[in-house]
Length: 386
Image 1 (tube, rainbow, N blue to C red):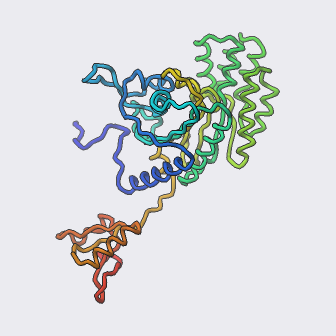
Image 2 (image 1 turned 60 degrees about the vertical axis):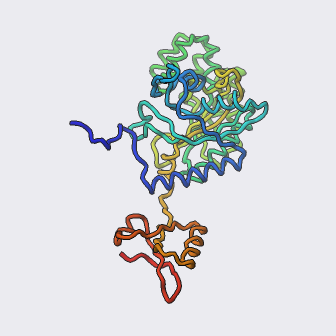
Image 3 (image 1 turned 60 degrees about the horizontal axis):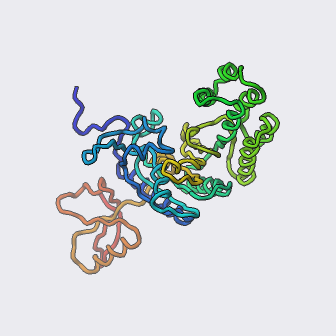
């Protein structure tokens, strides 16, 4: 049976007026907040050559991209599946600044498959990225901005999981794992498969073996970091990673931080701290972020970088559903006093729409809950009577 012409592909959907209004209001609120923190707005194109989109942070997302041939150049193009590689390209090639650069963005990305069974294949991605500072201060700033973002949206995080890829990489170097073995071990740790982990590390020499076995046990509050000092090998990479995690714990005592030292999300491009924020209304992470110092290397200019992103439509759905007052229906009358009143109301932020003939009884469905009428020689706003 053929689908009707108006049917959309699976996991794509129209955004109807009330939801679109909430999304747009939140978009403006967050971008204005980012601007107040010094983050400059950029708008990368939705489509680029696959060579660029598949570079750096995006190379592991190649399978998530919808690809097609450019009829002008013959080269393969793709719809972006993530905006971070594009913003990194802008920092590396177009702005080319030597100091700190703060950038933000908001726009759709497109995935071949949805991230979860309830996710859209066209998230509206909003995020902020900080380039040019390798110190922990940048990570603190970005994490605080994420917390502020969630608070403004009304979707406060109940938990922010924090990890550090440096622990896994330090242990892998100590164990002298091949790239293939490291990839396999990464998959086991991501799956929290402890029996498979024991079997895999059976042939690895100490103390790397014990270090790998300890990682799945190291999750919880900041006390986990103290335990990690005793359980993990005495390595520079381990010490520096734990120092950064402890720094966050001290600076975010007022936030619901938890630590998971076996969480390796973003393993293929993150280089340091990683974090994921969770809300009580969603079973999956509503925001992801972390440090990715090597992404710019693909564009010829590696720079320290950290940032976060989230789906604005998902965030708006998690926030309060309060709606603004309905519109005011104004008669199509050329009277100067009426024209002045309409202008005054619109200046106050009210929606005023002009009445068109032949539609009596249908204005409420257009969003009107009040109307302007002439009473005692003056124009007044009164409730709309059906």
